Length: 508
Image 1 (cartoon, rainbow, N blue to C red):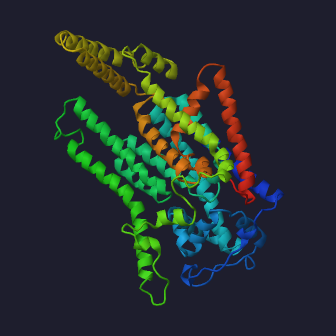
Image 2: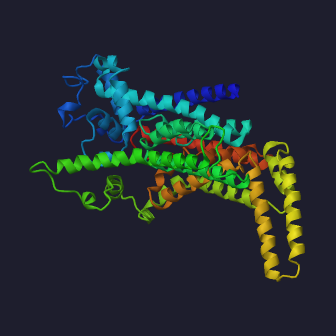
Image 3: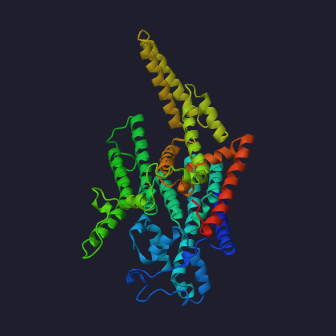
């Protein structure tokens, strides 16, 4: 396992060098479509400067050309993150970008990289801090992705293959640019790993931090709900008392209450940010001659984030379903196809549990190379079949409808037991919350959001890489074609994305 982690570390570093090199090469060869990235107006508030003096401009810096080149690479949403790190939240629309990345960039630029300010200028140092931070976060995220994959799948080959795919995923350009994808992936993977590893407090802090990087991090609280359901199932099946204490001395009911509290804490970190924005604007309304109240301030439940997404970016249910958006749907179709296929494949695996467990054993054997569930499932077959036969004997004279009901109930019970017992591979019960999470995000990106962001929005979903890895590792000639198709897709989007994004052309 340590050898595999070292391999993942090496590939993650190589992939970041590749992306940074492509950014530099494309920026040098092709002129940018829009040169406004180099504009640097002064902050509205003088309090946002370093110390008592204004930040050094490019003309005052020792190496102004390097500073200008770094600033020119700040495009698209990166402009917002750098501006917030430099000047804070100045305008209403900037509140659509959560604070974790700007705060981290501002901290690094004023501490670790502060000696470079006289050399290349303050804004260039901000951009450099963002690049270093995100690329380092991606490397750590790749390592924790492998750890999480091995913990969930219990399959070293599939976990390694999935981690390699993540290192060269089609949204790689955003993980090496000044976007929040790297920090979100790092805190999400770390938090879920520690959650399933038993470190609930650490998981709560990390998953809460993911909600301050991206808004969809708030729904990571659902993993705590899933763990609480597993504990409840364990209590019911083992006939435990609700007030029985576990090994740590905590009662089961108390553990459920603590789990609910942790879910609320994860939601609250994002809610606190919304409350601060509301308080800031409500306080500004008291200033004489200030602008009037915005529409979202008058709502019963003020939601600035939702208002910004709808008002400035046109986000809403089916609002993107227009003929002119067909190219964007085509651009997002590969990742959406993989996401939907991974969900459908998991659902099919759940339905392939027959009354006899022969096929379930074959399924486990195909996924892992050996029969891992024969001993645990055989006892359940004998007991469940005996229970089914006994019930038929006792109720032989009852109506055919009642008999059919008993048969269906027994089959469902067998399927549930087999579902719980299969602990490894893509059909594992532990994959279930990831599938639900992926299903929700796929629905949102397809019907509510701008569909072209699907490539980077779904790129931090583990089931996509788990499903692809099993398809690539499955025996047969079809897996070779699948492997070639997946790697071609990743390579094409890495090259196309780095070219278009770096030169300020639209890409997801």
